[in-house]
Image (tube, rainbow, N blue to C red; front, side, top):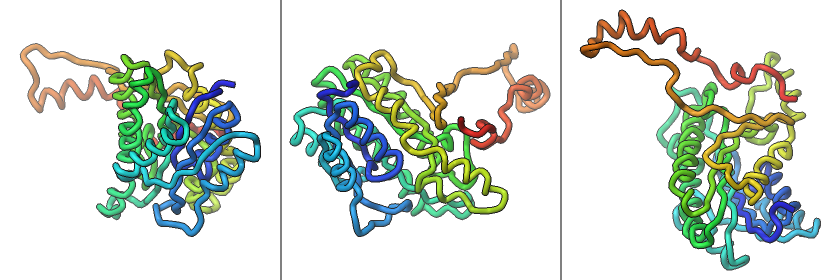
Length: 301
């Protein structure tokens, strides 16, 4: 088993993709810290905590797991999460930063409160947890981070400026961790998943979207777990700083920002010469104003 004897923290693991990852990691022999504070999509507290249910499922299958309710959106909460893992299992081999919330709205109606809430959980939370764990991984000389991002942060989506910004920032954070931590034997990668979960069930149920919704419901959360579990395992040695995407049975390696086309002018530029020469030369390589559904125009297979 790829994670035999390893300890894996999965944040936001009470439902959906996080739950599927936690179950799959346990199935590969990991001892799992199931972190979930039990909130709705917008971050509002709920009466029951689903982390207990996931821990029970893992135990029933013969695995080992503990529930943790520390909030990743707080520095002290992340420290508490790392401490709980160390107290229970004595080491931390991998972290899956999956916890996230949504506050979808068109940009001109987005409030500072909603923006800050999304950034605090999705981006700052991943930083807090990663920063809390990296000293232990450095001491061990090994470790892996898998950050769950979104194609909304790579390709863009309507009404998701806060969510997209947080996920794009997380992709950049992952690359920086990969660069800084390489010398310690620590890896960091991203996965942009696709599945029908609470996060995607907010798609408006309109006649235009109905066929898309029915197709999306066939893409179950467990389809994303194999790649994530692999990246968290020692089998992925040498794989770091990459961005992957999953869609049902498809796995993609996503591009990263590189120069596409350049133009040089002796003596420098003026605003007018930029307008007259630079932009006409570069325009054929412009990206169109697309969204995620245009970048992936086919149904997941």
